[in-house]
Length: 314
Image 1 (cartoon, rainbow, N blue to C red):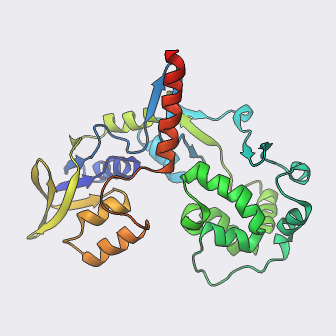
Image 2: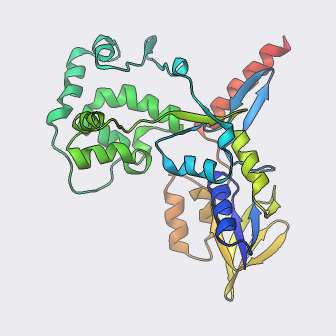
Image 3: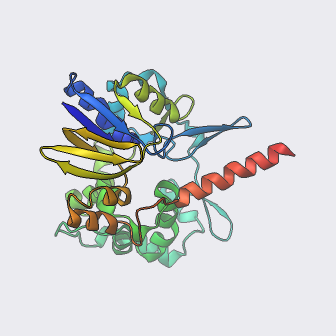
């Protein structure tokens, strides 16, 4: 069996790794638009400084990421973050230390006392039971108040996803937080219950030695496949009982296809296969065409990297 995998970001690498384990005799062909694997995950060294272009690690309470590291034989590269590096700051009128405990929250100047009392009122906010999804902003406003959402969740959304709360599904991005409300009736109630059991929704931020790019290079090295870098896919079409994958270098026929690309890129690929699916994929990001998009995180990384280069040239 010949299987085409479109995209060599982390989802594509994980798909290829587990397909190879499950089907050792299959022929894997991996198409990647960039010149190297990793997608948004790559580490750059600039004048002695290490920059992560995308995610800088993963939380250990998300078992899928840790399992991939262990299954692929990369456990020796694991690098937990230091307790000394877990201080966070939010800038409003000035830099404010992120309060990490109730006493620090009470002393913080990030919210006024009426706004803090609204946050504490989360204890008496009725739980939502219909199971419908919400944006992070809707969820935060409902349970903790608009001020908390605007100050804390805006900063968290930008830092983790390079986005804003109104564009993020709380169920998709923070399922463990949603589970606290569903299972315990509220966030604080849930955290207290978890604390009694010695568990919680948090985790230790963990990367790999040399940056997260080390994990990408490791996966690339252990996956036996035909790698087609710098070969973006324009379309996937039916070819009888098989599929044809169209790129600028020609057409490749495969028996199965796994599309591990972003929703807006996948939308253009599946247009001839399923026009309704293509429409829905494109609608996941408002105003998206099928060309290249640069995220807020990309722009911030490029500005910071270029600033370091300029300073080092002086």
